[in-house]
Image 1 (cartoon, rainbow, N blue to C red):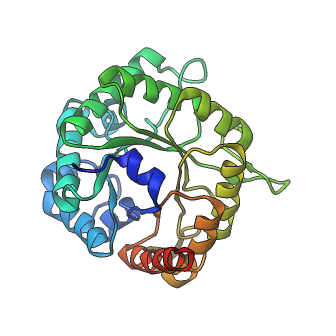
Image 2: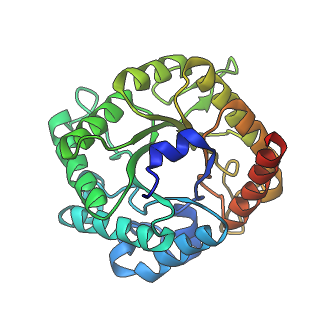
Length: 302
């Protein structure tokens, strides 16, 4: 019988994939174009990115659906394609990783603010997320990752949508933090790590996560994972950026090399990471070296 995602993540450290968005740009995605739509119009290019991560030993793939809720797709005039985009995104990832690996359906921020700060109601956002989640689950996702979130209310709404679609779906709640003046970590909306973890635990997310973040380096994620572990014994998923992006002769460059980031993998595992992957700027080369370090850690502890 195939091992379930939560069983696997509680038993051993899993290796996820790296960035999708920056890889799509490298593959030719134009500025202002929807990368999520490529699951329909350029499926082989999306498949090639997933396949490169699998070749680098990723066993968890995150779908190409970061901004594929109907509300997020509205800016591209693609709201009506939300279900189909997510269905295709999950199927492509599943085809690449096979039944031996795992697929996490990616749900990112919708790009606005909930009432009263914005004009979007929780009811409308939940409906938008539900359409997306149904597509991801029907496409074969093993669980859902709600990622790059800064609003706890938006996470709560996404969780409600997931549970409305199907009970028992594993949920990763992944939050984005920034360094603040006192050296601590806060979300863009000012929420502390302690309050974030407390909220996610009370919400019932099965896996705690942190990813992305402005100005963070790989060492910052070691500190974040350690803080998470101090507050909870739930599995932790971490997806660090390859540093802060900068422009170099018209190209976006990330300075955290595969070698430098891989050197911190033992620290992430020791701090308590259960799933290790990468966010913006990370590549299959990063993931391949992550695997090598994870194997060293496993052999040293056996």
